[in-house]
Image (cartoon, rainbow over all chains, first blue to last red; front, side):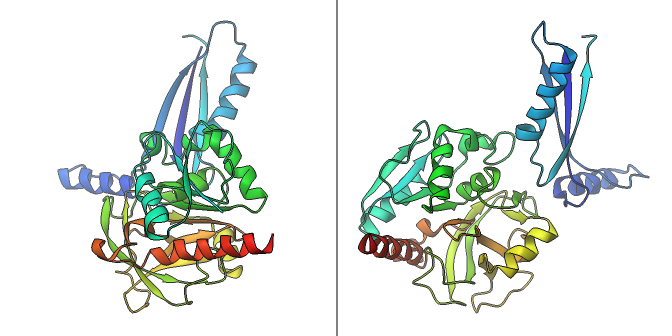
Amino acid sequence: MKARIYVTLKPSVLDPQGKAIHHAVETIGYSGIEDVRQGKYFEVSLADGVSAAEAVATIERMAHDILANPVIEEYRVELDSES
Amino acid sequence: MKFGVVMFPGSNCDHDTYHVISKVIGQPVDFIWHRQSSVGDCDAVILPGGFSYGDYLRTGAIARFSPVMGAVKEFASRGGLVMGICNGFQILCEAGLLPGALLRNKNLKFICEHVNMRVEAADTPFTNRCQRGQVLSVPIAHGDGNYFCDEETLRELQRENRIIFRYSSKDGVLTETSNPNGSLDDIAGICNRERNVLGLMPHPERASEALLGSNDGRIIFYSLADTLAELAKAS
């Protein structure tokens, strides 16, 4: 089982890296881009035998306590039981 | 009375800080390895600058789980004096000992230069030798020093007089150009509600000898030494 965790800055937090990327893509000639926000992506493989419920609980806790800093970031967790 | 300087893997201002405390201020000081689960007999603990754990994940995010941080938290909760410089400030925020977070600098650059910081409060164990409004010339060296917190926290910091240093001009005026990194409300350093935990981005240990261009920063170490001497006398 695999978990995917997306961590992004809260909308209220300025993202200078996203702004620089936005500016760059516009300079290169991409049009119609309204905003770019940069974030982090994690793939976590869970050990065999871990139930989906356990996995959700563990990954949620890990995302909240370590992978994201709730002061500035928010996160989204996806669980993929096929892989 | 004794100072302790914590060494994390990736700390790089630990020896500078040790040098200033032992040779410039002339106080006893020990290193505290990050695997230690106690701060020993230290009366003031300093988390030095550097790039603990390579700044992986977020600055200070992994260092906060070092065994020594449990001891530092416990020490701080008993009123022990804790000062985080640069990466140390970032670690204190990640550990929840100070509110807010340090974001990427507004201009995305790693900035290494002398800045001016205005002392906003002299009623702390770290600034008692300073005058309110005094301007100190101290270098910064960081890529993530852009202080951020939510509005409610900012109002609390202002109301409780917990913003201890602000970036300013050399005359003590707050201008857009005197803020090097985009920090909210020109914040260069803050303390906790109990005023025994301080975090600041500028490096006072790099400005404690005239030979290095400024010795303005040593007043912070002298203030701490005075505080410890008072505490020793009282006990």
